[in-house]
Image (cartoon, rainbow over all chains, first blue to last red; front, side, top):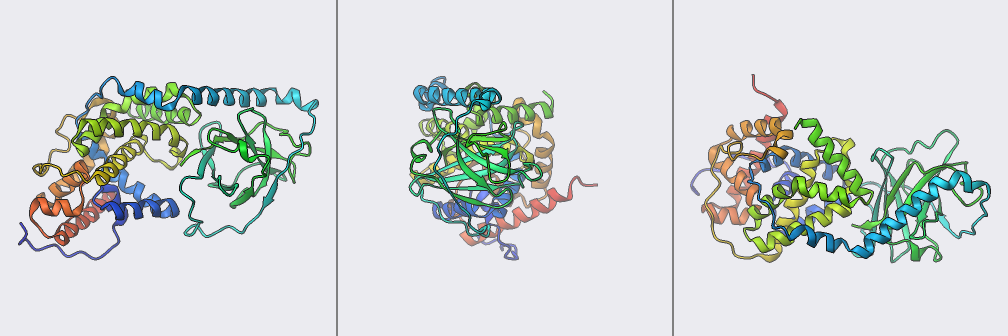
Length: 244
Length: 190
């Protein structure tokens, strides 16, 4: 076989296809994975190769996994965490449901936050995130469509909100970002740019609540944000922080 | 089950998982674990490793379901298979366990292995198109592509297996990928 002439190859970079196929070695794979994280265009290219090649998986014989696997997964999800999550979510939902009523009597909550705007970085060179301290959230609308990606650097207390589409908050309205920690009460993280990445410095007061399973939400507010420090509309996009 | 129904069911379940719905994760597990476990086993060739990776796969689905973006047109099955393959291949690379040499995959059997009905239906057309395009490759090159896909092995391992220089195998695979892309984009033959 080795004496068969190799076909000429025109040198096109096939890394995305090679990564999707799975022929790269450990170092090359890690590099490709990191590149996919940084470069959306490369990530799309990898996905296109997956769509082309992965129908091959249809030919892989199905094998029913042993019965103990699902209980193991359930245990790994953790009953305590799950209750906290569910509770936090129920509280968040209850908060939004009752908001219209509660808003009239709302006392302003003193919130300390600072919004720092930065020019949008080029897509090819976002900051390299610290491995463990990074949390992500995908904020979706009620139909599950993603509108905003949030990365949160716990070590720096720095949150980066990147709209994947221009957020349709309405004419002369602002997009206000809220953190909803386990107590279910929204805390403002400030108004974000509807079309470009915004970097938000989370205040020291709010940092303890900004962790895995805390929810993030965006409401449409008057320019400059809610005057009361509480949301005045129901959230259009919502998601929760989780490990990368 | 109709194509769109199966796909919509998974997309809906993934959306629910993103919202923290455990029952939805269990539904996805019921619908897909046999396929994904098959994928893991084929790559890892070791039940203990495959079980461990399978658990990791569903925990990853739980955490990352929010990152699945159906509006971009990505198939949910592809997304799940990608997680399964990536986890399995990463494990394979990390353990670097010497594996018994297995024969190369045989050509022209993509559609003949009795694809399971639950997941295969959705992609019957895609699988048929891919199978046709694989059939247009040099049979030996197609074998190498298939082995790479099913077993997740490196260029080096493929080259060792068939006794060819690594550069030759790289050339075969890159050329094959280009041809597959061209063939799939051209659509059905006249």
